Length: 83
Image (cartoon, rainbow, N blue to C red; front, side):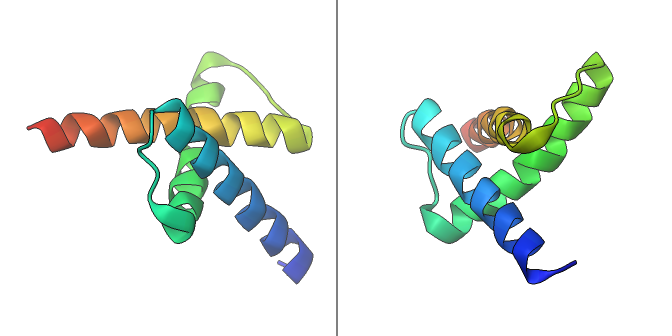
């Protein structure tokens, strides 16, 4: 993996985590936390989209997939925190 690809992954992760935090009404975790939430969300979103048979390609598709996955991740975390 080259440095350019790594920077793109981190940027998409940070943006997806930030968007998910705003969608979930302020459940962001700071810049490092948002990057982690975004990257894990991208993995989760890719898995969920593949189960539904949806293929989102390109930069915008990756951002949408990561954001949807991060929102689902934040929702699951909020459910766990309630218990």
